[in-house]
Image 1 (cartoon, helix red, strand yellow):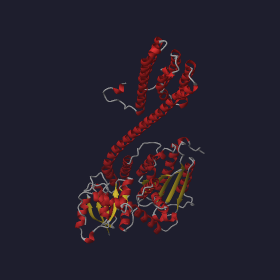
Image 2 (cartoon, rainbow over the protein chains, first blue to last red):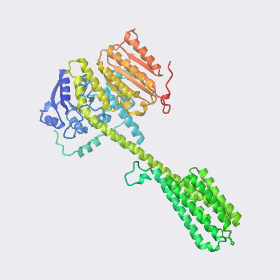
Image 3 (cartoon, rainbow over the protein chains, first blue to last red):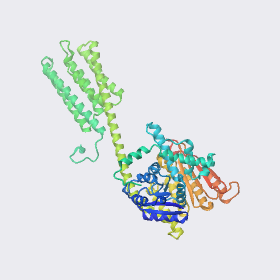
Image 4 (tube, helix red, strand yellow):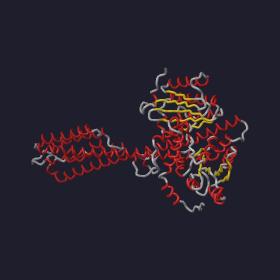
Length: 228
Length: 408
């Protein structure tokens, strides 16, 4: 049984997500929280073996760290220290998507995704993988290609997190078109395991080089309650 | 000038207009300087002139002419080339006249006060004429007039006349160069300001739009989408309708005007909505299109429509034959072409087998794409889903929409 915690300030959305997960019969809902602080409280009160495998977070939630208009990237990095974070957001904006992955999310699903996509993302994340939906792949592909072009123009000394290799870009492109990992693998002439590795590498490259910014942001944050 | 009344002006004064006014002021002051110079020369030398009365009359005329010139130019707000030309002719003739009247009894050509006057006021020539050849020619009128009158009436030696005559050209050249620079800065300033205003307007509109978008997004849209996907609505048709409305709202909120005809992205969004009504949920991945806004307009409406139609056929085929309820629509504009792919994980078909859906689809889509100079490729195998890839060349920048390939 996969244990999942949901955090979203929209009650109907929470209900919908819970319904979809419970229907599978393979997933149990540990907690359904309306704000990051509520979730943090629950997690600190939980028994040691009881922490969830996956935390599904909404990006724009009224909470301690935000007023509902700023994406709570800080929550993502906080919770990703204890569990694996899957961001389920109504926003599909590239900045949000890339920012969430950089902050530590192991997957990003938009709310108008199909229930099947949501469930498969939860299962992928629970198993330790990077839930790369076709939408996420498309956004990452276009965003990373663009920032690579900018970086090469600017020639700045800042570490931008590494550029994607040609194969990794190709993988992203194929997944963005809707192919499964297996199909992408056969199109590229490699094994599925290789494709999985490429996907993991993409995620690692996104996180790389952003630690400094996260640290700076963390230091700038006022009065956060300590998390366990 | 109405713009300078006490109330706020309807339009801000451009930097270009301000430059012209500044140049005009400079011209006026140069004129004043020239007249002052004449006054001083007269005060010191009047007793020596052979025809005092005529000299005074001429000075009066010259002064009046200056006043008229400045008044006319002020009324126009700028230094008017036509009037400057007239002024130059006037000055040239008064140079000659003045030289005739003041033929010195001793060899001092500087009694001839019109020379310094015209040197000082030649500034106007550099300001008025933008093309350097015109400016030099007009200056030459003046310098030649001086040279001729100095040689003929004053018997000035050439080695004295030449540098004096060249001073005119030096003067006007400097004036011309500085004026050109000033005018360019004025233009640049205006350009920057217009751009800044446009950007600010855009930003304000964008902020307004995202404020509304956020509100719709966070509440109505989420609720609609949840309802469309959950089991709460028993009526499948109603659920599909709610799904379609959610898709429309999503398109609106994400910045695509839903009814912009000929806009590829908008039409693809509309296609997705139409199919949502039939129960097929299409994931539209158009991040690449969205970032290259300029490219959208490089597709002629014909080509755009063909692509959308072909994609629509492919998607309808999925809805009818693939046996799945989801598909992915991906669009990407590369440097020289646009690629749209439709991928589903349905039951697929064997391309070699003669089948109603498969073969007909391929032929019809291929023809549709070939008609606009593009191509289509269909890949499928049993149990492995289907991939339909549509490509069209993008017009090169500058060729624009006029260049649409001929139909066969």
